[in-house]
Length: 283
Image 1 (cartoon, rainbow, N blue to C red):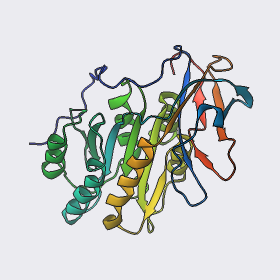
Image 2: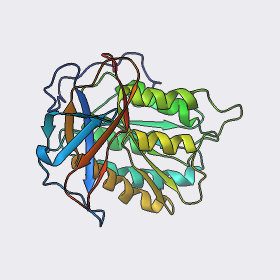
Image 3: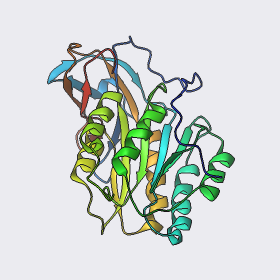
């Protein structure tokens, strides 16, 4: 039996509260810091960070270096043949094998249909069952509509929210490219969802997808083929567990996009974090 399509009811969970304790107008930014070799840096303190909002220096009002629980959608592009399914299952094992007990995951696929599992859960046996029994390849790839529904499925969840995407790199349908191609990046920015994508060397990656991933503070990983995807997913989960939480009060709530820059004072380090947010009380 196939999954039910995404339900309109998405319930707020109290199980996954973050370390964010600021006011309702605190902007939460999750930052990954690496050294020149690409190794994760985990020993930084609040005073090591600086943050600006539209180029205005802001005081860091909330900070945590503890691992933040992951709330994510594993979104799999099933445009292809049934021979790819075992490789997709193996790739997904890279996520499941890296989860910590407090992490929660929902699995979604897209091809001829967009299907999203009804449970956002830390139950690995259930997630494994979905991956073993509920993958249905197809001939189209509605990438942007699938991303939109994935965001909807976690939009009301508290704390950090991420999408872990495995895709051929672009949308393939029989009609025009979905209008969601222009609206989804704006929604991702408004909802503060991190998008982390894995795609392939031979794929032509949609430029809008590249930009959205970067602006969300996510990672775009290009692998040779599906046999490398499991390690790539495991690396993304490891980076999420190593992120710092940096919170600040916005310059103003004027309803417009604001640029964020998070930097560290220690030389030779690189910071990856979302680049923008919508300065609205409803962000």
